[in-house]
Image 1 (tube, one colour):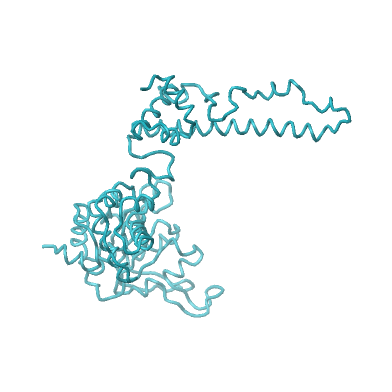
Image 2: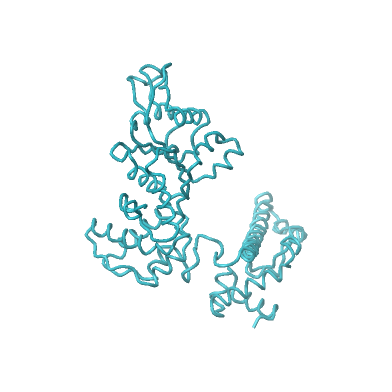
Length: 403
């Protein structure tokens, strides 16, 4: 019988969701063996915690756990760092040096971001996994090491194998046991547990009163996509507690911290993510076309003004009549007099079929209706969200017969 609580408490893993329980169960099944393990998951999801749990519940738990971030070691010295070197083997090698594998003898080595390893180092790693043998840089004799290897990556190693960036034999050797650490967005039911843990730990260390998060604040946190996963959540919780010392964290505080509008939009994104992919794509296209329209008109204005400035500089006539610009020049530059105000300029130069089966008018109407509904028919907010003037919005409402 696997003791999930023992595994959970050994390193402080948080979560009661099905995904976390499944991960803990697999760790419990393989921890007592010496088989190599591949831990996969998004950046910040807690892959190192899973590796530590494997070590803490193994027969090697009283020996060393050596953590190596492969992406942080320059490729020129990574072999020396992993396997050590002999004195004088290269410039700067003033003494014999143990590598990480020798330091981890009898224990566990955790190779984080293993997908970053150069191909020649991957071959040497495969030899260690299969025979426990390696050579220091500059030595010709092999050394033996008894070490368990736990590797982690946020990459799709299968795709890296197809691109010939990762050795196929090493991939198949590692993937025998694959522990998947879930992304935070896939188990948001555990979010309140993380918030409570991070909040209590931070306030205790910094002598700040912790009055918790309101239910509404937690709901907003659940709606966020969490691209940085648990690491990002911890940073957000700590920043909220610092900025709002001694206060109960409210929904508005969370929204401001996440740069969110109405609890579900990120200002750093061009559109809302709370919709299906087809609508999202159409809206993104329309929004970009609206921005393109503005840029084109601004460029026309700049070109028009610069053209006349060049004429002014080129002609310093004594006869004022010669100073007047060519009356045909404005026509050649083709500035549309109807579009003196960029906000009222129409989208031109793009065919309807360029955006699929829907016409530009249908796209524009759909997005206007969506934002009117979103802002409960508030026309001012709708105009601001669409980056157009209220006058233009009124004209569009009439044109598309939107009530």
